[in-house]
Length: 384
Image 1 (cartoon, rainbow, N blue to C red):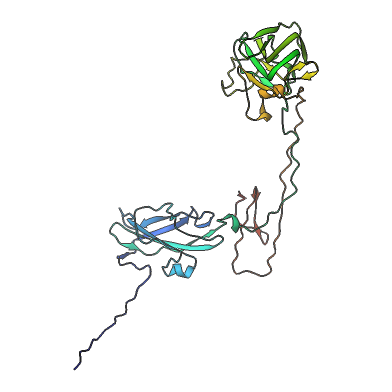
Image 2 (spheres, rainbow, N blue to C red; image 1 turned 90 degrees about the vertical axis):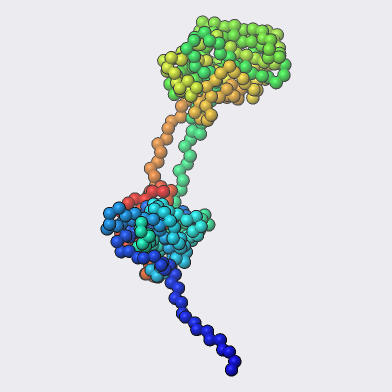
C-alpha cells in the first residue's frame, strides 16, 4: 500500500485593523479635530490630528494610539485606512499629530478615526468617524476665474519729495564743520559755482539748513586743498540760487565746507541717533553746479561727504547723489488724493441640476461672504 499524504486546511480569518489586545469600554478618544476644527477645510498637504483621551477611571492615561484615514466612509467605518494606517504608535501624544508621508489630493473629502491604549495596555473602541476636506494643495489645482473691477489709477506722486538734495547728520555743535565733495573726473577750468538752497516743501521753509558761514576748496589730487572762496553771508539766499565767481581756477575736486550751521526747533528722524532732540544743527543743499564757461561740468559726478542723513527710499528723504542730478528745484508738496472705497463685487452662479452633495471653494483678495439660495453660508465673514 502506497503511503498517502493528507493535508488538512484550516481557514484563517485576517481582519484589517484588528488587534489582539484586550478591549476596554472605559477609555475612549473623543472630540476629534483636524487643524483645530471638527470639520476642517485643510489647505496643507500634511494636516495635524488631535483628540481627547477620556476615562471613567481615575489616574488613567494614554500609552499608545492608532489613526486611520480613508477617502471612503465605508472603509473607515470598517476599520480600514486606504489612505493612511499609522499602526500602533507608543506615546501619550494627543495633539497636532502629523504624518509626513500622507499623500492627499486637492478638493477631496477624507474620513478618519482613532483608537488609543490605556496604561494597562488595553485598547479602546474606535472613535466616531470625523472628516476633513482639502482645499487647493497645488498652484495648478485651482481652476476658478477671478472676478473684479477696473483698477484705480495709481496715485500721482511716485516721489513724494521728488527732489530735496543732501542733508548732513545732526550735531549739537554750531561750529562743527560739515562738507560735501564733487569729483569732476578730470582737471577742469572752473569759473563759477552755483549753490541751490534746499526747500522744505512740507513746512514750506526756504534756505533749509543753508549754512551761516562756509568756504569753497579746490584740489587737483584730493589731498592738498586751496581755499578759493570763504563766505560769512550777511543776507540769506531767500530761496534763490547763490552764484560764486572764481578767478583762473583749475582742479578736479571741489569741496563745499559748512563752517557755521543752522538750527531749527524741529528735525528729521535719523536712525543713527534715534532723533536725539539735543542735536538740531545740520547743513543741507539741493544742488551744486560747477561751471566751466557755460558748461556744467559737475552733472552726474560722484559725490562724497563727511556724513549724511540718507534714506534708503528716495521717496522718503535725502540722497547725496541728488546734489549733481541736474534737478535744481523742489516742487510744492503734492496734494494728497483720497483713497477710494473698496469696490463691492457680486457673482451669481446657478447650478443646472440639484446636487446630492456639493462643495464650494471661494477665496478673495479681501473680505467676502458666500450665500446659498439667499442664505449666508456660515456665521462669520471670511478674510484671506
